[in-house]
Amino acid sequence: MLIRDLGLINSFWVYILPGVIGVFNLIIIRSFIEQLPESVIESARIDGAGDFRTFFNIVFPLCLPVLATVALFTAVYQWNSWFDVFLYNSSNVKLSTLQYELQKILQNSNTTSSAASAFAGSAASSLKVSPVSIRATMTIVAAVPMIVIYPFLQKYFVKGMTVGGVKG
Image 1 (spheres, one colour):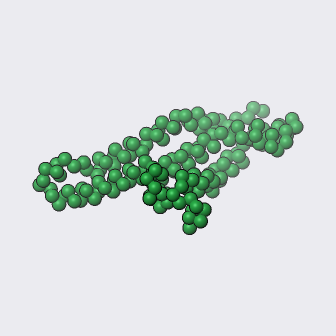
Image 2 (spheres, rainbow, N blue to C red):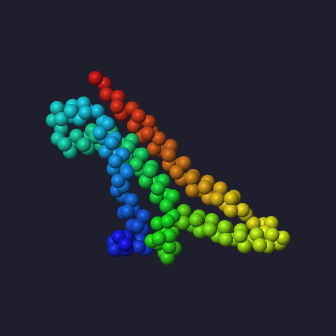
Image 3 (cartoon, rainbow, N blue to C red):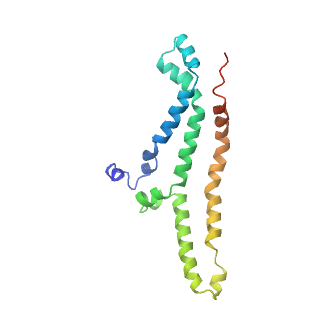
């Protein structure tokens, strides 16, 4: 009802706005910021930096690993989301996503395979592709973009492991 009241049905914004701020992601970011060494923030304040300067020059650059993690979580969630299209944009073909189209193909293959099994002796049934092979192909097609994106974000994950190393 909220999506409808905001006028997001049959709109591209239904993919972006509901997922902009997630509570889980905020908890991850907050926990990461709490883990940052207090000595780094103290040294910025001793040097005369205010709160905003400390945040944008010290804290924000140190948060790039957690922001990359949250971006990856959000990207994977949005990439795999076919149900949003089904609920909000199924009548608009221009706003369909790959996952929704793959889901329709899988649904079609399940329906077709049950109909073809009734005619097991016909020549058409020997040419059919099994739902298992369609599902395997769809898994590969759906996974490739995330596999391509991950190496670009991997350096931020490695940096996140070494953030706690403050020289004394």
